[in-house]
Length: 545
Image (cartoon, rainbow, N blue to C red; front, top):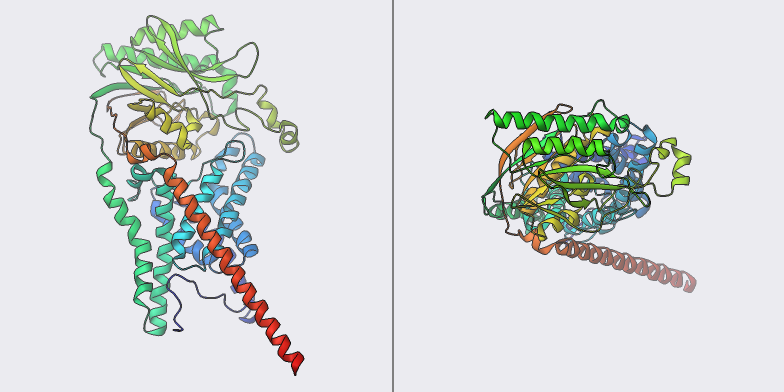
């Protein structure tokens, strides 16, 4: 048997650091773990540094290679904290550090478990494939549990400017994440083969091919998927207006100024109507207001209804209002209302994926121990049940509200129910000038490519945007600035492979990950049994002697 190490099997762990002179070698992997997480964070918007994800995963692969499960858990936790602490800093913008630290730690624990899986498969042949599948499985679990999951930080959401983005149209966000992670781990394997060649003067051809394919396959697949990215107007076009009314001031206290927020959006819509009459902008076919643009229930507050009526009649087009409905009994509703200039309120859509600890408070008594801000949520919101697709002046518009843009099923449902255009009304005012709005905007750009749809994002305080089906932003606002975006957008009805297949690519990758973990477990068991047999044999020899 050749002594050359397989191209996709990392070398055995080296001697303990204590024998190599001091604590510094012992600290190298923990420091590299934190750095790998920081590189993943730096690859996310608003920085256009998507490519940093590749060295980030290459470094993480080195950190985890051939590590025992306990060590991998610790190193993975450090990597997760290096990634999630800065990425989720916005969650503590107005409520202090406790919610931010708790959420970042919870997400880092998920990543630590995933990293333990990566370490387990790192000894297998073709380990980058198994490891990328394990990471994708870990993301799938984070997106579902607990409390309905928290998909923020999915690697695909940092790839809105990436060369890999066309893969979203082929297999959705799971395939996009898998390909990027595979390329990163493959980069590590290529570097290893180069090092081995320099050290030994030769490397098996199969090793070189396997390492190169791990890097090249995602790139080739992305190029092959380019024809799926199409922004042609299959069903004509529609002129849409997105109104950003702004809020009186930053922070959570804006909710106590509900009438001012409503007035801001009504006034900006009336200004838009004046601009239309003056010929400064084209007349919109329909108008979109953001989530929480009327926190006064227009069904129960005649003055709020009058303000909305006046603004909608002024613009003379169907307008979708984001409102909080307050029934006498039961939970609150985060609702989008289709408002006709002649008939008033018609169709409604209740947000289906509501935000735990934001719109409803699970384990309230326990959470109160850690933060008194728990009681800011005095009455929980309840989830809606039906998919939100409105017929607005002949255009089928699918709606996902803010947080829902992070969930694959919520966006896909609107397209399968006939949406020719996707709208993501959002409210980011409670997160100030943090990176949250840019992270969420990147999600909408990925969704545009994934489903081949224009996406319009009206936000209370920024950044509102109009996005083409190829993921490019054609118009956007500044933060905390009243504005109205008017643009003619292409309408489309064809379905991308990602839309047709839904969760199938994620399921296949999950099975691949489970298969890899099973192989790793079986291989570990065989090795343990062999050691025991060898020890038993040597014991018999000693006894006979």
